[in-house]
Length: 106
Length: 119
Image 1: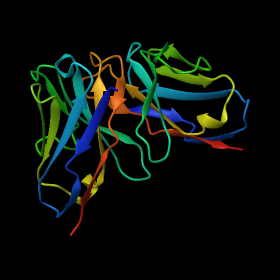
Image 2: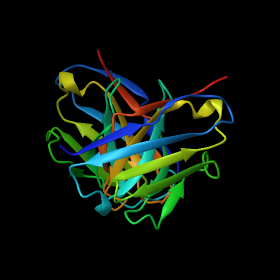
Image 3: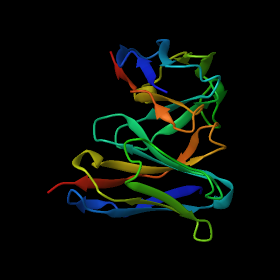
Image 4: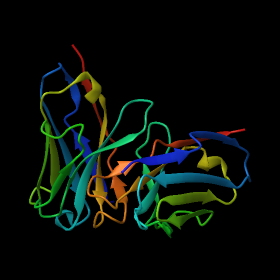
């Protein structure tokens, strides 16, 4: 299953609402997870099963979608949110990640 | 603190072998599935392999199937990745990551260990 993220990068300001899209090559039901990665660090799980927020993750992060189209939204971008975001499907036993979306400071 | 610590990375020649280890602490290791995920510097994440909590189910990415072997020792709270026939394109940071029923995301990650394949 191929996962395609868009955009591959974006520039935004603190306080902006940011939306990242992930599209699967076939239906993956709700088996979609989102990760955040900062330079030199391991990825961090943000959202699992499309819309469930991982413990400790701020409520400004939210996930939605179904079938093949999914979205990660940051309601009000904070300085610590500048990072690269990855989606990952867990519908197939062969797991796959999206190519990533780098969120940069405008 | 729940933690995963990888070791075993290093420099190896093309065609060579390397064995990575990942040691778990502060959680019941035998209850969790485990993955290996790699990342070429400056590139995205690539899932490599999965092993179920008992070791009875194992899956690999096509790019490593037949060359890499994932295993675990629940008594030692460790998961391993035996890498044979290494290629230059296997150069990456390798992370181990804890999974939850394979559908709830990888919620704990190690710090990564670097594998460099070069002559």
